[in-house]
Image 1 (cartoon, rainbow, N blue to C red):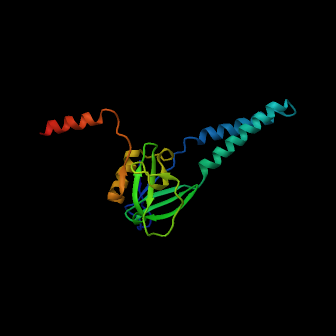
Image 2 (tube, rainbow, N blue to C red; image 1 turned 135 degrees about the vertical axis):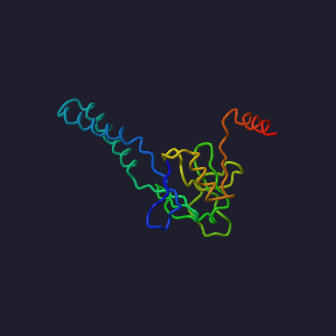
Image 3 (cartoon, helix red, strand yellow; image 1 turned 45 degrees about the vertical axis):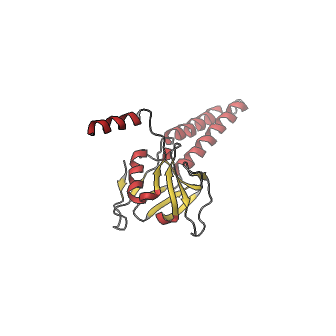
Length: 181
């Protein structure tokens, strides 16, 4: 569930997205289990120690990734992003278009005549223009529909929900139209 920013009054209408920490328990179990096997193995078989060490290293890597700084705030003036590979505050005017694609990524097409921003890492799902991946919705707790509502409210006409509608969605719309006619 998205929560409005209730900070010092500057961003009273801002919406902060929260990182999904679903991998955190698995990472902790890997580290703890690997350390236990290493402690019990002592001078045992080398293969067991190597496997345990590998599990510990994988667990630590996942743990570090899950605990990295993350911030994504959507507001009337733009969005603030702090994630691996992208940090900054971006005004909506810096983008010619924003779109949410089928993979659950929010991509932004940089506007013409603006200073260079982050490098293009994606493509706009409708017209293929070079774009910057701003957010991966698989990494946040909020639902895509909640994020879409906030983007529609704040980014306005720049935002396009380019996700493929679920099967049968057209039939429901046609049925609603017939019922209101």
